Structure formats: C-alpha cells, structure tokens
Length: 357
Image (cartoon, rainbow, N blue to C red; front, side, top):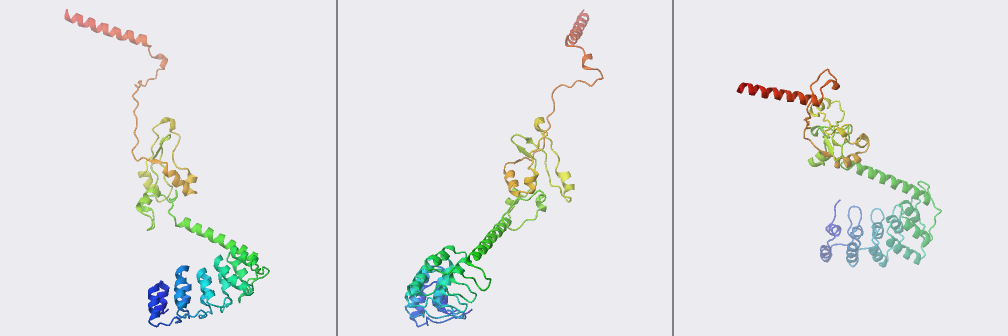
C-alpha cells in the first residue's frame, strides 16, 4: 500500500511536518489506494487529543469532511468506531452528515454503538434527537444500532438507546433472526468460552513442575528454551532422600518407568530411618499430589529439605552376652560371681607370698 508523505506524517502524528507539507501546497484531500484521505487517517489515531489536533489543522486547509473512501465511509464513521469523542464533536460542528450510511448500511450511530464509547454515542444521539432523525435505521443484515449494541455486549449503550432515544427493542436481524435478548445471551456464552480458553492457554504456557511419571534424570528431561537451568533444578529434578522436622531420614521414592528401572536400582539405594520411633513412616510427597495436582507437588516440594548425605549406622555399645544354649536362669548370680572373683584374687596373693618365701 503506497502512502503519500502527508499520509505518513498523519499516521506518525508529526504535527510540524503536516503543517510544513500543507504550507508548501500538498493537497489535503489526497487519497491512498483505499480512497482514504488524511482526515480519515487522523480519525484512526490511537489518542483522541492527537487526532483532534491533526483534524483541526487539516480542516483549516479545507480537508473535506464529506469525502468517502472505497467502502463509502466518512471520517465521522471512523471517529465513532475508534471512540474519539472530541473529534466527533469537531466534525459535527463542521456540518457533516451524521446519518450517512456506508456500503454495508452502517451509520455513525451504529459504529458508536458497536464501539461501546458512551460519550461518543451521546454526541451522535444529541444531534439525531435535535433534528428528529430516526435511530432505528437498519443495515443490509437487518441490524439496528440497538441490536448491534446488544450483539457486542455493550449493555450501557443499549440502555441509553432504549431509554433516552426510545429505540425499538422488538427487532430481529435478517441474518440469524435473533432478538436483542437472544444476542445478549449468545454473546455472553461466547465471552465466557473465550475466557475459559484463554485461562487454559495461560495455564499451559506457564512453567509447571513435572509429575511423578515425567520425573527422571535431569539429562533425560526434555525442556523448552523458555525454561532456564535454575527452574529445571528447582522444579523438575528427581526426588532425593528427604529429611523433615519430625519424620527424620526417609526412604527415597523414584518414578516407576521401564527405561529407568536399571539405573534407579544402582543409583537410588534405599536408606532406612535413623530413628526407630519413626522407621515405619515416610516423608515422601503423597501420590495424589504428585500425579493429579502438580501445584500441590510444587507446594510440598518447598517444605521438603533434601539431604544427599549417606546414612550413618550407629553401633550398639552395650555389652553383648555370649550366645549359649543355657537359659538366663542358669547363669550364676552376682554374689556367686563376686565370691569366685575374690577367691581367684586370694589364690593369686597366696601364690605371690609363697614365691617370696
């Protein structure tokens, strides 16, 4: 699409360049490939204040407010579509046709109702009610301004058209043959469906921890370029021996996967609990949280302390009695043991005395 220098200056919002081009004699009614004038391009600007300043400058050089493009649209219809209230008021004050329809039959009032901008709608309605013009005009598909507001879920605009302009609510379009209430219900369902799909897409795009079936070695985890190494180590690493405040050292749990069974048997030794009181309990994350709810898996992982140190076996320092086939009652009592010891000491002393003699 080829644009003139004036069109490019208007699209960029360069006021000094626009004034310079108009001063050197550039035609303000020049059109592009689609038949749009610089005034129409100004009506499509993003900000209302900037569009109004450019339009005021173009209108001072006879830009032509009644010019239409190849679709039959005027600068007023573009201003109503983009919700530029100040520009709409400026164009209305310049004696433009407020009820001029394009090739599809849409009027500026219909574009204002579809945009959902209440001040813009009120500016158009004020002129239509002042000159007693109809607000129930229909386009080629049978939509009126009130029906279009209901179709686009602009409830406030529909209420203004019905209460202040007394628009007819007993109309149906010729394309789908739906009333205003039916269009409102259909639009609400579509909006709810789009919201659910958007939330689902957002949940899929976010970084989530791997489930128990997806956990494995870090080298075998397939990651996307968006996930950095720190996120992988925090969320997708395989479980390690966990130590909590009350449970103590627990057994390792590993995902049951056919490709990793051989490696897990070598790399993941079973570590028994160091405390006999808690030997029957484990500090692993519940299976439901690991498989069905990855969010709970991530929450539980934050409260589990990972310990890679080997288990320490504490030896029992109590003296062990020699294994014997006799019962405990058959062993000699303490007085008998003391008497035997004293007798041995007495014999040793007597032997020493005899040797000295």
